[in-house]
Image (cartoon, rainbow, N blue to C red; front, side, top):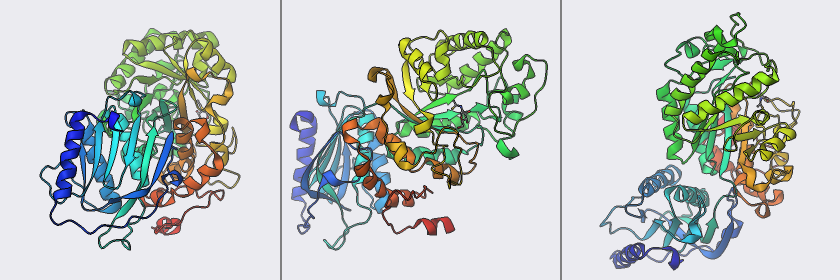
Length: 537
Ligand code: TNX
């Protein structure tokens, strides 16, 4: 451990610990329970865990300190303090000097150790009087504090001491993700979801170390992002949704708010404008786009594959250039998703011509193109990314082209598939996906070489859901399993072990007011908040 902490940090730690020792009103020794860090309920499961069988007493005499002059570390400390406050009501100061009531510290330390060279790597050392989180950068530190949050018991153990404490099991954790891209997609086109709904989803995903939210921003039924140079896209194309309810769209300011909220949680937003198919709403707003001389009607059904842009018209590419320019200008992440799926009424040659041109537009605006697996039939560049959802042949083509692949097999990873025949929402064209089926597969098992796999994404299409409760019913608990499939190595994944850890998530999900599906396959842990009482509210 010493190796990984800089001299500066050691001096700081030493001074802090001496100050703690000198504190005059020293508290009576608090007996700690015997713990076993290796049987905790962490999801995703960390790479390596070494228990030391004691505990750190989180209480009102705890303070957080972070490395000075390390970008983003203080913000991570403040984020942790806020979340600890939400959970325990304790007010834990961050980087407050001359605080003589401090007895124990949580230190978030920037370290250049080679052991932390892997992206998002962190180490967590939990001792009786200190918790040290080592990371090379603030992203790793942020992942590390999610682990710490999960280790705080649901309730304080006030039978052990005169004051309330939350005993955190002691030991060491070494961790970094198996895959860099760990995502979920939300379809805000079939049904629109408010900024607040999206933020809530982001918040829960971040707790499970998911780092990408892909927003499906346009489809036949609606255009959901303001484009200032083409205002009718939202004025007309954003006014409806499946079932004919009111629709909606994000202004660019609102989209920026989502992007910033995600960035604070080290999550990348991937915007998708689906084309050349799935474009009915855009063509209603600007009929020249479809090139067939007809003005289509707003569409409120759920059929796919009936619309297309006119791929041979220059003005269509001028339009696309404006859309990509405006969206990329407010998207700091490296990706732009062009859809490209189910273009059943676009001729194959036209489709290839279109994807080739759009890829260049995306690159001109400084982003890497992502497309659904069909895009691999075009002459795409190896820097572009294929999102494999259906065709193994297309996935093979992508690998042959040297592309990276996002693994999203509909039969295993589609959050809009029903759990079983009794499910209230969802479809089942690909499969029924109960919670165990969603977990017991491996991104590596489909013949896509490990080095081509960028990661895993679980898409949530919204034909059958229109409220946050319905969204949560389909997403949770399955998305929690997908987080483990993308973060943890195969040796650390096991259904029997996972299902026990998943059961332990109930109190957190209840506290966060997540209306998850209480799968009968899981022996859900009881919490003060029962599902029934929340539903009644
Ligand atoms: C297929 S998956 C689609 C979507 C639908 C979804 C419903 C993909 C790239 N396209 O347009 O919403 O099925 O499950």
